[in-house]
Amino acid sequence: MAGSTKRADAQRNIDAILAAAAECLSRNPAASTSEIAKAAGVGRVTLYGHFPSRAELLDAVFVRAIATGEESLGQVDLTGDPRAALIRLIETSWQLVDGFRTLLVAAQEVLPPARVRELHADPMARVERLLERGRAEGAFRTDLPTTWLVSIMHNVMHGAANEIQAGRITSAEAAPYITATLLAAYTPPGERVLV
Amino acid sequence: MAGSTKRADAQRNIDAILAAAAECLSRNPAASTSEIAKAAGVGRVTLYGHFPSRAELLDAVFVRAIATGEESLGQVDLTGDPRAALIRLIETSWQLVDGFRTLLVAAQEVLPPARVRELHADPMARVERLLERGRAEGAFRTDLPTTWLVSIMHNVMHGAANEIQAGRITSAEAAPYITATLLAAYTPPGERVLV
Image (tube, rainbow over all chains, first blue to last red; front, side, top):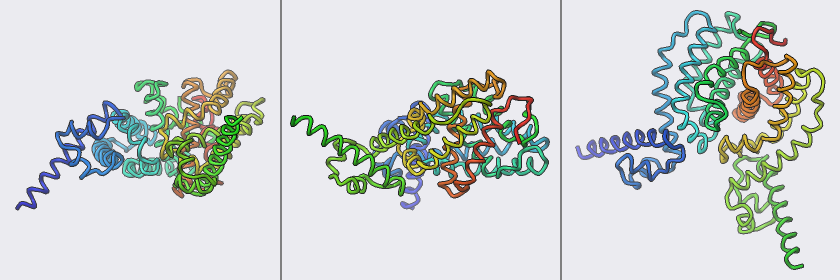
């Protein structure tokens, strides 16, 4: 009984820390663990007990953000014309990346690119399935491997988040830029790029 | 006299540390500062005196790598057909990124994306000039800003380095994948992607 109360307390603390971290980091990607502990209403020792480093905390916040995103992505209609389906998937994906942009910037500073990509395994698998169908139907190029095309989407989207953070493009501009870039990049050689 | 000898000693140590760091990190992106100090034949205290953190050391190694790269890039013929010139520029750029790939992977783990991009200011300015000329001559799309097109090249190339590191593509495959992707991405809407 005492054990399960302890576990419930621990889970409540973890939830509070992750919620506070998501909030603090979305305001300021450089938010410190002390600030996050304070916002969560827990002591620093408690925070470090659950997340021994800032990188581990950011990783856990990221895992939650991806899980939240997966709920929205699961509702995108991926049937019909593959190009139109891709445009819908890019739009929702970008809304998520843009919404979590400051968190992504914070994560990129402490997590290696390989870990950031690994955290995106589920959304990337969805893109891969749509690209495979579009390739089979002649909508997307087949001269480059699907995994490469998926990595392009990942890199272009995350690159856009960095461009916004650097003040070189606005959040509103990014969506059409990403769509125009990826549709062109995925066009089969010899075919015309969509206007 | 004593002062200038001291300065010459310091410069010799810095050169030895940077050369050793470039060598150690190209073998192992996780090489420690102790390993690097040992390879440079200097004490750890001397290394930390010049580079207080591993990030500062990696930054300095990167600055040198870019300067070396600039010498090769300056010799690429960027005249004539803009698409052919871009293919030549991509080839040489990729040889450099691929040659410094392990160093890049190490740098990406400790330097934020904004700093990595800042370090590439000179090579990116060269790409920008070529893209501007190609846009004026109708070879590249003008519906997206040039700075965005430059960022795409940066992200696709660095993404390729990460794909190789993850074992998903080989170094030999990367060059044609990058060229095919960027030429398509830069094609004006309504025009055909080069075969």
